[in-house]
Every structure is written in structure tokens, then in C-alpha cells.
Amino acid sequence: MQYFENEHIKYKNNQLYVDDININELAKEFGTPLYIYSKNHFINQYQEFENAFKSINHKIFYAMKANFNLSVVNTFVKLGSGVDANSEGELYRALKTGVDPSKVILTSVGKTKNEIKLGLEKNVLMIKAESEEEIELINKIACEMNKVARVAVRVNPDVDAKTHPYISTGLSSNKFGVDSKTALSIYKRRKDFSNIEFTGIDMHIGSQITLIEPFVEAVQKLSDLYFEIEKDGLKLAHFDVGGGIGVSYNSEQSFSINEFAEKTIPLFKKLDCEIIFEPGRFLTANGGILVTEVLYNKKNGDKNFVIVDSAMNDMLRPSIYQAYHHIQPTTKFGNRNDIVADVVGPICESGDYFARDREITQSNSGDLLALTSAGAYGMVMSFNYNGRRRPPEILVDGNKYDEVRSRETFDHLIYDEKIV
Ligand SMILES: Cc1ncc(COP(=O)(O)O)c(C=O)c1O
Image (cartoon, rainbow, N blue to C red; front, side):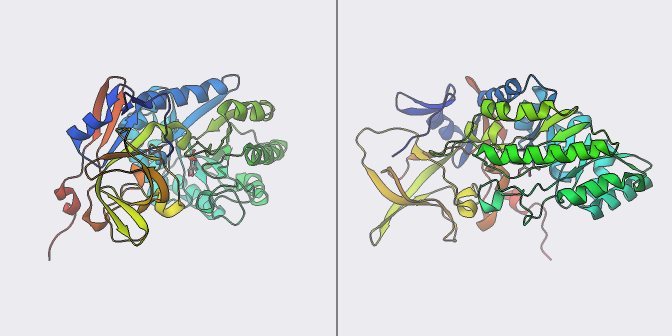
């Protein structure tokens, strides 16, 4: 079987560690399922990104949808990052970290009146608008509030990011943004929107993108539009290229951040404005694991099943994207054979699985397994189906750790209900 290891998540004397912390010990203290993150991995990824683009005027806005734990968001905020918030709930969370609202961008394909109002009330840096109707509404609300809304139009550049269809967002058949022609006509109509200042232009073509060409093509298309807008007399302050940089979950080769910088900086240098990036997955995915305990092994016909105490409600990615995560023991036993098995959770859905026909080390009831690359789009997508409580999250900082979210209690499961 294959093992995942990186600088911060690795085996020492056959025991899995996150930095200096032994995972078996942590699981004894907090139980399973259990999310564990390496703060230093997050910091290193952020600094690598920063360094790659240090020769240009740029800013990172961490896409908190990838992992919105307050301490995780705060880690990036303390490094100087802005935040990309995708709803009023995310905006609420972001502001709880103390981030300056002028370092927050408000995103979402369908913002409600309340979300727009909140964004304006808090004075966020920019609201990204995704349709003409939304722009009309932002203008109306800003007018009622006697404010000027700073807006970027999200452009759908119609580029195939060649990623999973559910996380591809830059094709004209996707719901996101407006096409270039519509975007241009909106910017040209700017005098019609008395309470909007168009300060930026934006795109986000998808997530887990491992090929650099679609990115470069999309940046090129957005630049062309930027220059047409400039020709029309409007100088934009921000050119936002979104997130989407892929990471390695298995054996896939993604482009490096330096390669990304090398290919795009010449294009960015032609623009006279700040370049905005909104990475999420790149910063957090490979800094997290989900630890689960093996409950049972069984065979149905020829098929082996390993039944674990974690389920699709804790980590949804395999069920909805057929996503791959390595699944490896937290203790390497030298005398175990590999088997081919499905690793499944206890939920009453056939889609509740972490791996199908996977070659893994044979494990016994009570053994612990780690699902790797679980730091992005893991805990944030968790839910309570089958009355399951969401797991705790531990943030490891070198040889220290904090429980940055505790396991939900049974009272959590019913706190907002009443019996009539
Ligand atoms: C607008 C926007 N920005 C940034 C991101 C972050 O993407 P990623 O985590 O792939 O970097 C997303 C994710 O879907 C997004 O929708």
C-alpha cells in the first residue's frame, strides 16, 4: 500500500506524528473520529505562496470555505492574509477572528439582501457580483444605506479547468459569474449605478486544478477584458484570479507555486493594479488528517470491508467527488499483509465510504487509521446525519497542541428544536 508523508505529517519509529505530536497519544486523549492539523504546514504553504509572488503587487485572501475553524483562519490572518468569505456565516466567523473588514472579500453566486447589507455595513473591501440583477440589488441597497459599494464583477472566462465537474466553475455551462461581453457592458454602464464603485474584476475557474494551461489562458482572457475596461476610462484597483491551485492527494502531479508564478507574473506585470489570490486547498489540504478507529472487518462474498467509526458526515469528499485520500495505519506493524478492501462508515448509505477496492494494510478492530489530505473541505462539509456528532479539531503547533473545536455534545444535536 501507499503511504502519505510530508515534512509535517510523518512516521517516527513506525508511529504517525503531526510535527512533534504522536497521533496515537492524541487519539487516546480526544477519542475518534478526530481531525488534526499542522499549523506549521499552513504557515509554510502561505509563505511559499507569498514568496513566489513577492516581485509583484499582490495580496492573498485565504478562502475560508476550505477550513473555517476560527484558529485556522486566525493563523492566516496573523500572517497578514485577507479572507475570502462565501456567506454571511463565513463573514461572521471571519470577523470573529478580528480580521480588519477592509481585508475581507464577500463572494457567492447568490447573495441574499441580508448578506449584501452585512457586507456594506461592515465595510468589506469588495463584494463580488455574479449577475446583472445582483448588481442592481447591490446598488439599491447601497443607496438605501447611503453608502458606496465597492464591487468586482465575477467573469466566467469559459475555460475548461479539467478538474472534477462538481468543482469546475469557469465554463459557460457553469452557474458562476457572467460572460466577458456582459461584464464589459456592466462596466460600461457604470454611470447607471450611482452607489457602486467598480474597483475590481474577478474570476475563479475551479478547484483542485493540476494543469497550469487553463489558468494561464483564463488570466490572459481576463487581462484582455481588463484592458478593454481601461480603454473605456475605468481604472480597476484589483485583479482577482480566485483560487483553485491543486495539491497532490495521491500520485497526481500538480504544478508548483513557483511554476504558477513564473507563467503568470509576466501577464500580471502588464496590469497596473493589485493582484488578488484566493487559495484555500493549497494552504490547508495536506496539513490535516482525520483519525478513525477500525470497528470491524467482514467479508461479503469475496469482498472485504473495513468498517470504521468515521463516516461521510465527517468527510464527504469520497462520497460526492469520488475523491482519493490515502488511508494508512497510525502504527506500522511489520507483520501485517496488505488486503484489498472497501473502507466504509456506519451510515446507512451505500455512498458512505472512504475507499473502494483499495489495497491497504490489514487492520484489526481497535486499530487507528488516518485519512490524509483532510485539511481542506473536510470538517467544513461535516453534518449530523444519522444523529452523528461532529468530531473535534486539534491544531498542532510544533510540540504543543490545542483542541480548537471540541466534539459536539448530544445537546448540540437538539439545541435548536422543541417538542410540540
Ligand atoms: C470564489 C472562490 N475563491 C476561492 C476558492 C478556493 O478554491 P481552492 O480551495 O481550490 O483554492 C473557491 C472554491 O470553491 C471559490 O469558489
